[in-house]
Amino acid sequence: MAAGLALVGAGVDTRTEGDARAEGDARAEGDARAEGDARADEARAIEGLIGAGDFREALSRCARAYAMPLGRLCMAFTGSQAESEELVQETLLAAFDAFPQYRAEGSVRAWLFGIARRLCGRHTELKTRREARLRLVHDTRPRPDASELAVERERAERARAALARLKPSEREAVVLRFEAGLSFKEVALACGIDEATARKRVSRALGRLRAELGEE
Image (tube, rainbow, N blue to C red):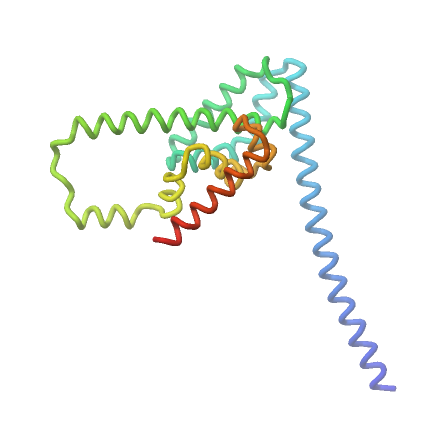
């Protein structure tokens, strides 16, 4: 009888632990679903404000909802906190100017990230040209010695260096997918391509990044 009670007790304990895990998984899934619903509700509210012509409130809510992820995206492209903050502001101002032309053909988030992508690309191109001109102007300065170059290389972020060596189209796609957290459909919308092409670009970018980082 005692042995039987012990087995029953063990069974109860086992079921209780399993139930607790299941409840935890269900709660996490419920939280994620609720968060997703909240984001969708916010996006619909912003789209409603744009449609009603209340552009100032729409801009305010875009800033609250998307400024941080936009900042992460711009940071991934530029590597500069100051530059990324400026680009977020430029993105929001450009969105405000473009609200009258917004047609809600995709999510407002993907639309904003598309604007940010274009601004970051333009900013990076101009910065590269400016730095190239400066190198020509100062080409007569003394060359840094080997130890200085080694220190600079050590300080360089491996992931960012590998990212910078990607084709611009692949870099944009992988940053939008993983830094901005966009779906492949949203990446396609932001880049002006179809979803299959977006998937291919991300896949190629990941393969090249793994190869680059594996060699170092």
